[in-house]
Length: 332
Figure 1 (cartoon, rainbow, N blue to C red):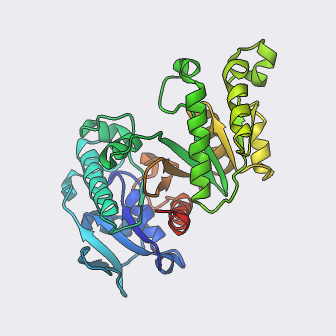
Figure 2 (cartoon, rainbow, N blue to C red):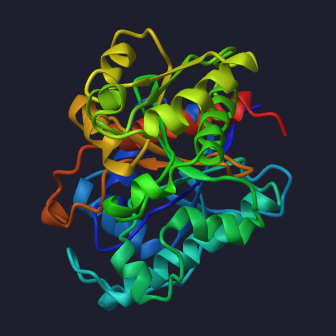
């Protein structure tokens, strides 16, 4: 059984529609999964025009047990935005509203088992907030829609290397006060669970320090002594393959050398900078803690090149591959 992947184009003002068009013309993509495009026909067609890549949109009855198609790409039509409302490279309420409507539909299809996973083109949070997004990010929005109350966090992956975060979209000045044994433990357990659901039998995890030189024995802060070291010790005693805390300027060397599978970071940019330097065109964001696999390229809407036919499909291809792999190993 091939995985059933629902794909939405992301913000129509950005590079998402172009990326989807490029993805669907990559060798082997339509053989790897049954793909259901969800959204406005003119948005997908605009992406094809920019990418100079063509495929047929084949309307399907999603209530059918098998909605796969032999020609073209299966398509569920929506009307979320008028063509004249799309302003390339611009933050707009209309673009944000389109994103929320297509995302809601994809989540509904996932809940009713029409699809097994979701891949989405880049969102623009400013547009989404103009359209009424009342959450810090799309992950918390999705969690509420799906009734999720457990710990959630964006995860990032690149070439088999993963990161999770103890804190995410908060001010840097608040990070140290937010770190606790509970949050560190939750972040470690989350990345361990997701890696197992991605086919890694016994994930090897390192925890990053927050202070320079891992606090230098307390000279540069005591979070390592007071929180991180005791938490890591307790987790290791519980038979998890976890170590640390390691100075954040060296821990990723362990990951690059394939000595570990994942790094648990303390704040957003601590891991993002490392991964994006290692491969901006291949990085993937996974919405960790949800009951379904949801993946997207780790880069943004790239308004600076929207509509120019220059978008690199690498990260979108990687997000699609990660979603397919997670479906194959997911335990319902």
